[in-house]
Length: 237
Ligand SMILES: O=C(CO)COP(=O)(O)O
Image 1 (cartoon, helix red, strand yellow):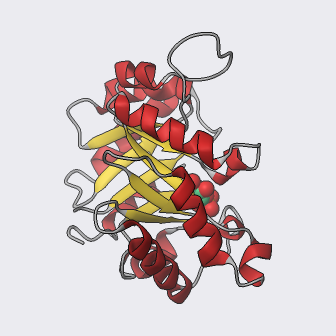
Image 2: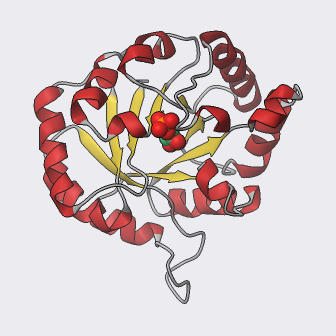
């Protein structure tokens, strides 16, 4: 499978950021990877319209586990599909920190698949858990409890201590964790790495064994830097 280079814009973006889709298409006209942008939900529709006919896919940053109804502030997976999304991030550590449980993450991933979206299920340990030697067990427990029972999905390993800190896991840390994840889930899902991925470290990270792509936060807001990460991708893994 191709590597997936995914932008998580988090709570950043304005209506005119749809122009960034055109800018990215110009910078990476013929990507060797799958390219995805996950903007804030109010921008999903306009970005999907701008991305029509380009290789760029659009995704949500979360979805509800429920069908449409009385769930104030939540986003229905079916609505994301109607707006043109094909992927959705679920279980990001910034949402888990706000109280999202593995059980909910699994239900969201299953609802997403049921509605035709490909979820990217996020897992990752805290610094305290890593220092206590618990990183692999924390992540494999998260996987066991939050992966969908069936269907196609991707996984993103994002060590919490590497998110937005400028501190990246070493290639050795990444190789060890990705091997453990592959061992736990078997062949199938791509295993993305996320946490301070930038042009300067993208080549090394994307060539690490079992790395199926990158989930990029800060460096995905600027299309020059995001395009350099896309150019670092390998076409077949
Ligand atoms: O959380 C992330 C992507 O989902 C990573 O964010 P940064 O690339 O800003 O560290």
